[in-house]
Image (cartoon, rainbow, N blue to C red; front, side):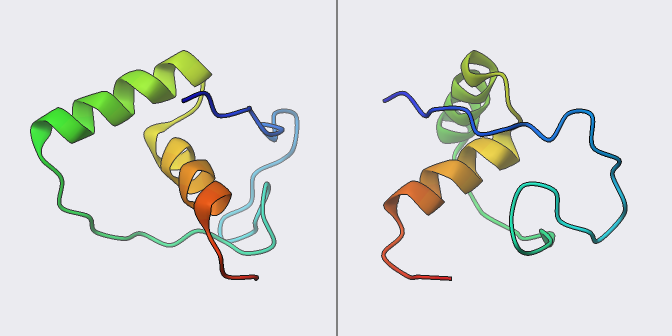
Length: 68
């Protein structure tokens, strides 16, 4: 599966707790994954040129049925 890269926000000044790519700021979350799943996420993220966190964000937003 190929996720299309959104704008990376490069060139925008980063300010803590101020969203760059979305309407809301990200928060630290905890997810339990097997090593196999985590390494796969990291590899896929590298192929897309984004972080593992951003890869998961895009994947979930793409498949989300909730609005907002």
